[in-house]
Length: 119
Figure 1: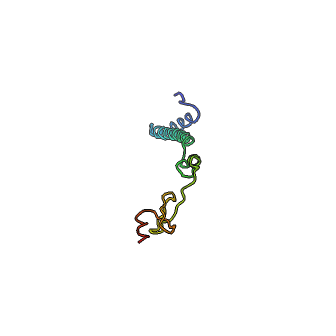
Figure 2: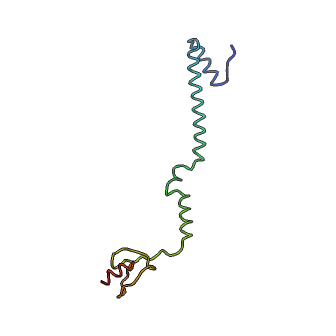
Figure 3: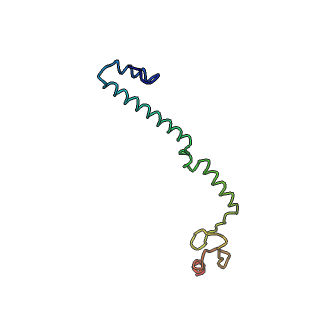
């Protein structure tokens, strides 16, 4: 009978044929070899996908791309942040541009707080 395959295949095939077993050993060996080949192919595909994949780092808030996006966003908002002041009546903080004054230069957030402070 002619030897099948080449290299490792030929060695394994001849080994299985010498072991006898009327084909059972050959079938088992072929199944194992096929599974090994499929596993190696899938591992190679997985490595290739893994190299091109963004990875877990891209989903982190510390990833380089996320840092670049935050930097671009913050550079586009170069205006000064609003100054916050505290209401003398209720103690809440609000932007200074919306502040109202009550009599003796105290700052309040609304007309209701102004009335409460004056009464």
